[in-house]
Image (tube, rainbow, N blue to C red; front, side, top):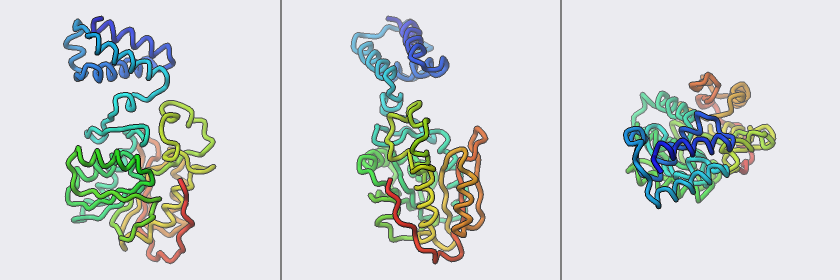
Length: 293
């Protein structure tokens, strides 16, 4: 079948499966490009080209997986983030554009610091650390995660992007960490365990350990806020992503722990997305009990 007719048929099937029209068209194009190993521009330049038997088989399998609920990124095995291409599997969260705000704020906080030391908690695919490392090759970055499967993906991405300033550290949050850092950043789980959104979109296919965090969704963030001062240099920063409706709670947690220069930044949609605070003048408060993920 011709490329243009194949795309139209696939788009209609995805729409009937409940995917919005614009998304159905885009996803059909992405999946066909993956099957043909071509760029999207090629689809428009050669609409009359025909798929061979193997290409048609691969595309049909991809469409069926998508109709069954598999995320496009897990079907293609890749996702772009910060203009870099990352390998992804169901062992780690799919990189999302909203999280680029975390990278932007990290770069701002580190702009006047030569050879900064950075700790990323819960690195997943490694996209945040890799994006930061690509912009600041002088930074020394330690990327942590409790999931060995996720760390294997991160290691592969670090290797493929040829970044030599990131080290991997297995562990549950601050477990095994003995250094102090200029910046600690994280995109932790922050969805309430009973939130119906966990059953929508791509979320059912993603690792629950990286999504949900207790009844309020704030268990992991609370643990990080409480313990980070013990691992920050005197003028070090904590920076983390949270839900669009959690900015007020995040700032309250930072204030309670004594952080200075507390602020929240918004994403491109205008939602409060990341909060930050400078290390308290005193970090004498005992660390909270470890929060399991």
